[in-house]
Length: 172
Image 1 (cartoon, rainbow, N blue to C red):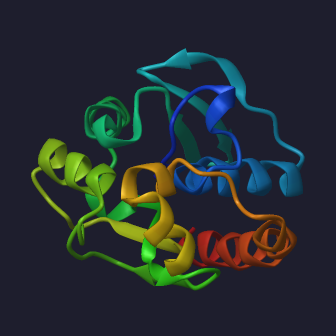
Image 2: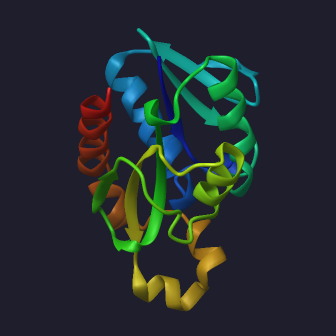
Image 3: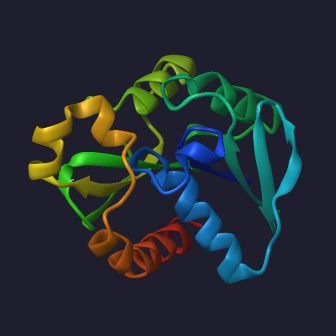
């Protein structure tokens, strides 16, 4: 069994924010595969399944997702090497999608939380570039990651999410 985790914050006010690109990617994936999410949270996450792959959107805040991922890992006996986490990265150019089979948290607090809970960073991750240096300088980092995509960025999202979809399929 594999586990695909989209990072984000729960609540409608966070829809289409940079920090919720993990949720957005999984929603896109499910829409393309005509799969519905189970609305009732289980082990702290909304989940769905396609064949032997579990997909989850943790329902606690982004920086505290590690416990949910660890609970799923233990409950379903999933090895760290069979986990893929999708997150934003404001240090990457907008639209750049980077896949790694393991690595450091690189300043991402969601990944730091997962590393701490699992005691390992030996899980795969897809980092989706959300960088916009001009906007980030105007807002500061916290407001930036919680900001909505600009109209120009929204236009590019389907192409970016298609790239993420392909990388998810490669991992599976």
